[in-house]
Image: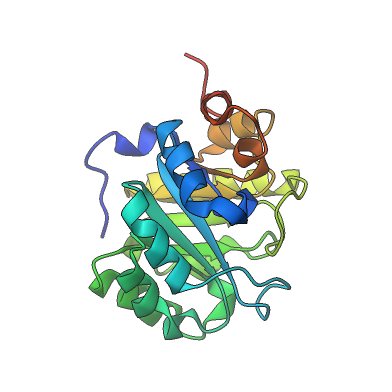
Length: 226
C-alpha cells in the first residue's frame, strides 16, 4: 500500500511526449527538453494492434537512456503488455504503465512491474470506468487518465474526462494513498489548469512542448502561475 507520507504529490510534473519530437534527432530532443526543465520523458509505445499506430520499442529507449537523467515513463499501448515489461525495464524505463483494457491479468502484470523495482501505473481510456482499478488502487504508484483516444498525437482534449479525474482524486484521498494522477491527451496552456484543478499532478504534453520554438517557455506555460 502506498500511503500518503509527504507533499511530493502536490508538485506539478511536466512530461513531454517523445511522440511529438523530431524523430531525426531524438537524442538532441531529449537533451533539449531536459535542459528546458522537463521532469519526465513520456514514451508512447504503440504496437499497431491495441492502437492504430506503431512507434518504437526497447532498443530506442535503451539508445536514449545514456543521454538523459530524466525519469523515463514508458506508456505501453500494446496488447498483452506483460510480454515486454522486462525488456522495457532493462532498456531503462523507470515508470511503466499498462492499459487495463489490454491485459487479462491486471493485478499480476502490475506486480510484475513492481518486482522489477519500477513504478507501476494503469492507463484508462476515456470510456473506461474507474471501477476496473477499484481493487488494485493500493498497488499502484500512478494512474494515467487518457483525455483523448490513444494512438495519435495532436488530438483535441475530451472535457468529459474531467469528472473522472475528480472522482479518482476523491478515491485516492479517501484511502489516504500517495498515488499520482497523470493526464495524457490534448494538454496545453488552456487545458492544463483544468486538469490540475481536477487533481492531476503529472501532465503529458506533446505538441504543446515539442511543437514550440522555446521548450523552456512552453514547459513553464503548463505550470500553475505563482
